[in-house]
Image (cartoon, rainbow, N blue to C red):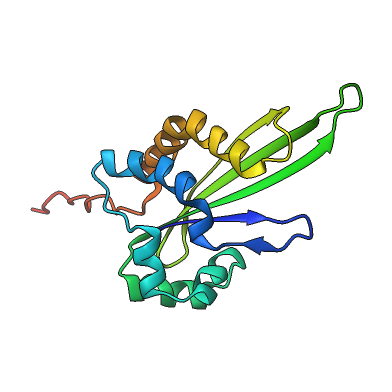
Length: 167
């Protein structure tokens, strides 16, 4: 399950999935290319309530676990966009800095991977557009890091070592 939210200037996280369709698709297409099964934002919204989506971004493990179980998700990828738009002191344009953090967790809440991408631009006030540019530029590397960490940290138990037989 892939969820994306945005940190507002007051610190509140907005997580209405319909607002981040292009961002979702940039990551989701690459996950599916690796053979992973993912759900669309529409499928997620049909099966779990917005309050449960919000629980992921409030780090509410009980509500998040309930939502994961209802959807049947083994893993949750949470993307969080944080941005800052400020006037450039030299030129009469806005500077936009966008950071996207991704956390891949098991449905139980165990974190498997954390990765981050960051970009800055003279982009005006279109923070969502800048975030999409960032995701598009960094998506291959982000997904590669997440997948590598999944392969390393997913909690797959190594085979039990056999003991030599005693004589």
